[in-house]
Length: 228
Image (cartoon, rainbow, N blue to C red; front, side, top):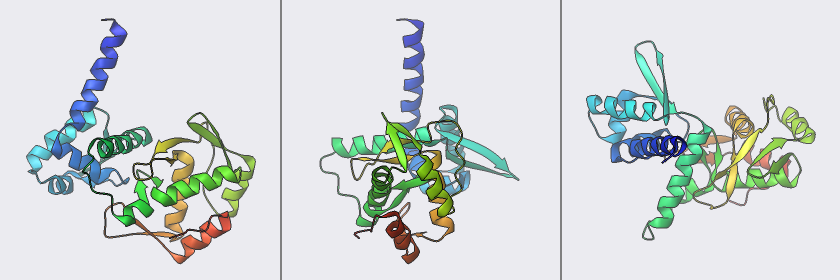
């Protein structure tokens, strides 16, 4: 086995081992919507002791799945980045395909939800497809950039997106719709604006979002009336 193969195998095994535990799966699922949570809350979510949660969290941090920062006496954990969020979404999709008896996701989750820091579900897919159709974004392979027309649209909708290096976004497999939605810096900026403008509001179901009247108006201006 070459050194390259050894490195790839070692890294792959470390990540799969980190995710391959029910308690750690519960922790990652709780953070998949982009939240940052302290260890005590994550222990409660996973149904384990604080001492056990500390060991599980360290394993996830060491594998690069979670990031952590200290604020006062608290340590907050979140999904490391968009790439990890996309991996989690793909794993959920794969698990759903493998388990034929798996029940369908509830309708609010299908309609609109968070995926890390961007929009997912039917609403996320509608957003991405409309941006492409109106030539506000350009996709090449599985990544893309915001066009000049798209930047003008951002300004008109008060979306604070400041393009740095390309790509500005990439495709993320949507586990309920089985087609991609957009993930990355640009869709994150759109999501921030939707939240700030009260276009979406959280439901009681974790990660699920409710589209408000202001949200419907936003999508109508974009040329994508929401059918639900």
